[in-house]
Length: 538
Image (spheres, rainbow, N blue to C red):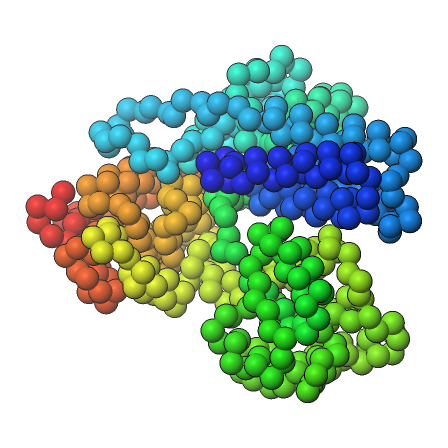
């Protein structure tokens, strides 16, 4: 867990416990609303940190709270209900605290570049639960280790270690005990490591057994044919946990009371907001604020929300921005008409703050995912060529005076020969393997893009030349050792890289050309090496 993210989680847990204590002491509806909002905020933070077991506990408490939400007449709740919620609050707090474990020692392997590990190269603990010593378990363990995970193999019935909680637990169906024993064991491990992702590998594609596994605590079931690709991709997604850019919401509301409530709710969920009371200012504010979503009051002076929405839907760039109407309008026909004329959802006033936050987050996540799909490469999930160039330009424009940034162009060696000898599906597997390795080794702040074909672009901010070279060369060594298992055997591949740094090439175009020329030099020098653009930099 990153320090900043952990600090944010601590703050949210403290806020939840304080709001619950306020309700226990005062018992008012307003205090219960504050508690519900704090709980929803904590649940969302656990989701961002990809802690599914804790999310499950938090959502159970959230559902229990929403079932008792009521209004001013239903609070304070009966003592039995308060005690029931108190037990759930204590369970959640204890589970979060128990999930905090010391990070294990980083791996030390021979053949590594002899420099200190950069702080973002962090292996993660994984438990591999298997009933035998088959090729699948051995191959999976080998691949995970190559991607920087520290794997502990356990028998299904073996006593569990208690020193370090794993990031994930992988249960292999091969040679597993009978299903009832499997589910019992899964449930016990889920209780012991609530923050871990639990995978069941090699299961059946049938509803009933999958549901039974989920009830026992499994988060993801993976069919046998998808194990290698799916497991590695999901594991690397876990280590890429990051805080996203804050969501931005434009609130178009002329009521000061309603606007204050809305903005307070959004702020509680770490969502940025901008308020305008006059919809006539929309076209001026939008290009400056660039919202992910618009909360639009239905009835305002000068224009209605529907009229403002119809205008926005005719402006290039705003056809797909989500618009959620806010109104006390209860006529279903009017609501349907408002949606038909350009809105995405209708929330009736007074608005439940938890529902408001959930709707806003869901709509923005889907909107951003749609936008993201136009910028990412379908095979690897990395930035595509156009998005990579734009991201590099933005990184350089915002680089502080004296700041470091190094750019690497990476190309897989003899890739045409790989496709000709092994086939294009294996070639795709090699490309994905390098993409996964880069995602597992580099930081969330680094640019990782597929520049085209078998070529990748990497930008490392805040990395002096010596450290950037060490990181890229270390990844080169790891990739050369990575086995690409397929139906016809095992393939190994290498890559060449050219490195250039901003202090010598102070523009996006110059640094890209310099890195590309160095990549050509690496090819001429025999491949499987890293060449730096300026002599004497390393």
